[in-house]
Image (cartoon, rainbow, N blue to C red; front, side, top):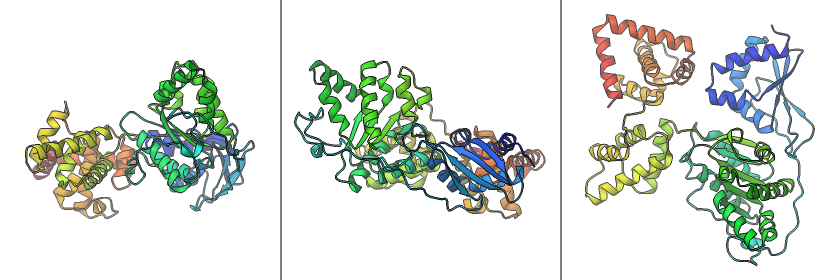
Length: 475
């Protein structure tokens, strides 16, 4: 058993890193600092309250397993929550939660005073003289939470966004910084927060603006010598959503005015939601003091949607547009367009247009023709989820059966084949493959691949199975 807290925690991290995706490990475990190890109680320091709540909800079993293996049975875990610079708490406080308890412990939020009603301010979105209550939030009603499909790729960002909408300015993640490459739904999620806030709190002033429009308004206000009116207008917003803040780069005047608006709103407990194509740490051309404020709250990324999420997006879009598509067609589209949700939905619209204009039913043949025109390289992206689906269809099994703990020969063999193809056709690590196929470890995956390779060389019928499945995966 380890007595040194840093050595103990580093050993725990080795186990954890083998069982979670790299991006999740960087997001949720690298920021943790070990504090002390006394009387079989490990204390770790996390940056915000949401951290320990998320760890308790998503990773409690893994934490318990790791701590028990490294420190010993009966180990307890305490979280030291520090939120110094963001204005919520200047002193750390400790949350005591046994590793066997998943319920968590909620703390009363710090109450921040709200300023009084302000007088009429010039509104750069419409005309001078409009009162606060008349500010148009500039939101698209289609970009609601109901229309936002949740998946592993966006669960953190969506959960944090909904928490912000339920209690704007009253959570630890202020600002909420959402980042990801174009086309993954940053604007949709940011506007969904605004829409939900307006539904819950009609009296609050919500405003969405993209960074380029903010820059244009500031330039025009400066030219007309109305800079103070511009600043005062933005300072009266309760929930300010600024899209694509990376466009503030190298615009010193805009950065300076936004810095003061940010400070004013944050100090009054108003909510800020920001989006960018990259995390704050990777942003260039921005003032350090502004970047430091972007890091105050929670930075949540949107990743490329996995196969199942893409299918869910296409099904939802089909239902909304009244399109009757077969699962085969949707799977074909989802397997060829994987990186951009906007392109994914665009492909579905193009398919509908082709069907309507040519008076043809939506079929696989039409889908293939359309995909060939839209996608330069229409080579199918094979995901672990899709591999499991093809293998299960081939052997007449369900996904649940494949991932169950049964030791029946036909199920074990199908599971091994799925692991074999996942290793050869994806970039996933052995640990990720095992976690997604039956909840196994990397050693089990390695054994499965060796078994399949041996059977290919010695069993003619088995080799035919592999050849046929391989052809189906490459169709």
